[in-house]
Length: 137
Image 1 (cartoon, rainbow, N blue to C red):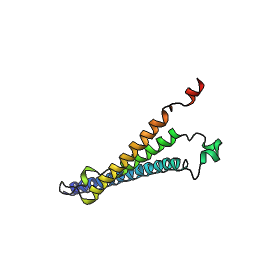
Image 2 (image 1 turned 120 degrees about the vertical axis):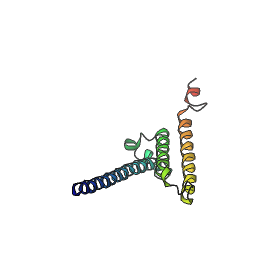
Image 3 (image 1 turned 30 degrees about the vertical axis):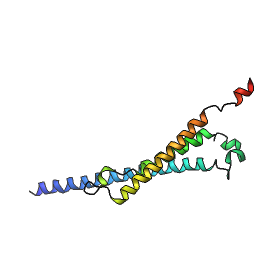
């Protein structure tokens, strides 16, 4: 019986360590997601009328056109949706808690923001009527 108890204790400890390792991996992944979200937000903020990084530093930030800024905005919105999406195991008794209900509304707002950014990105990629092509003719 002594060997069986030792094996059970070892298995319990291994299980606890595996769960802790999984938790650390999830935290590390979420940290990377937040880092990339911050970079995407900075790309969007740098294109605002205040900083105007593209005009002030064309050699460094000349690549920041509307398409890049729009893609960064979509990526940032998707990161927000990913981080705030409620897990299936968080409900209490099969019902949504108040926090989950509010979180679902926030997710919907984040998704709407992402769709607006995506439509701006698609709209920016299309040629404007009467633009350079019309002037060339």
